Image (tube, rainbow, N blue to C red; front, side, top):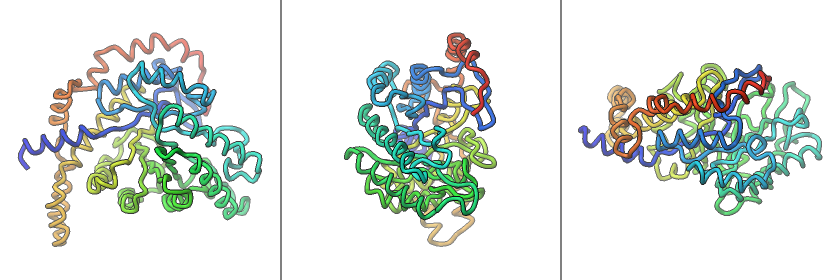
Length: 394
């Protein structure tokens, strides 16, 4: 492939690449042990929208903001007009709506699978309100992470909890408008350490099938056992038409929520390759960042994340899939792997810079952020509020 053909392919790929930013990624968040406060962190929903708008202006690839209901819309549907006004003001739209059924004290033994019918009803009511919020702010996706589970053998009925979870997700699906989707996330452990009610992609897939045709699976790249082949999961879900979206991050041990590709960029490349190999089925798949910038600066980390994702997406777009298929059919292992790895090792940065300049974007978004003084001004305006929030524990 000559340079001009490479350029055309990368430009086309980047023109279609979009990744959603999480509102909570701009605020002071931490681990279960505590948090380290940053003076420039967002302290209000408006500041989160302002930060997200700035990242989108610098990168041209992040036009939506994921919202967490209890953290961003504490008054529920009543907050929808304010959210829409902020979207108009800062040029980024509300993205996925994320219910919170893991934070309240009542959920100590579970939410939608709690043995208490009263607590299950409360959790379901919150999920249904989240659908109403999504409708009010014109959001298509309700993204559900169900943290329920147990920590000791014999302390809960796994079978009954399956039934309770099925029942709740079925009712949420029934409340969706025709344009909406319910994305079912999974996680093998944490906060519970014996069993999790939606512990892997097979369970999430089964729940989604049971709920109905507007339910899909959400893959968080940090929510897997060590060594699990995530791109194979992606290929299966695409094949079944059940891949709804991603939460992108990276990890060294467990769900570390590190910035994308900071540990294993080859894994991100392999995942992107599978998506680009099945473009028709992947057309509706939503990409979202889900990271905890506890040490890195919030804005710097978010811009770095989007830029990195763009560069790896460009590399994956350059895989010559027709030639690769020929080599695969011949079982020419070394040549096939070298062709594949060649795209991964290709330096996409010069062409991505060209794309940015051609689209009226800064050639180097991180440098542009630094030169703008945005972070310093945010720290000046927000520093006192962040200092006053205290070093609380999660």
